[in-house]
Amino acid sequence: MSTILLAVGLVLVVEGLVFALAPSRLDEVLEMLRNMPSDTRRMLGLSALAAGVLLIWIARLIGG
Image (cartoon, rainbow, N blue to C red; front, side, top):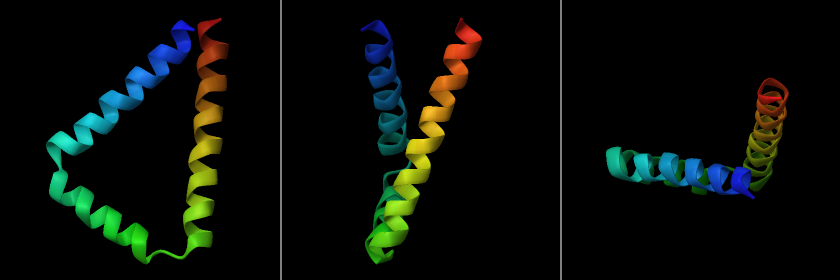
């Protein structure tokens, strides 16, 4: 349970930094996503998912 809380906390920190430090850039990124075909967005999401799983797996290996 503590690992899940840590993960959620880290996501919130990163998301908060984006909103706090570059709100106008975030608008541009959202506009780019709106203009992107849905298949491209799906592949982007699946790639991010795979990268996240890989990072979790590596962290678990290193952390023992």
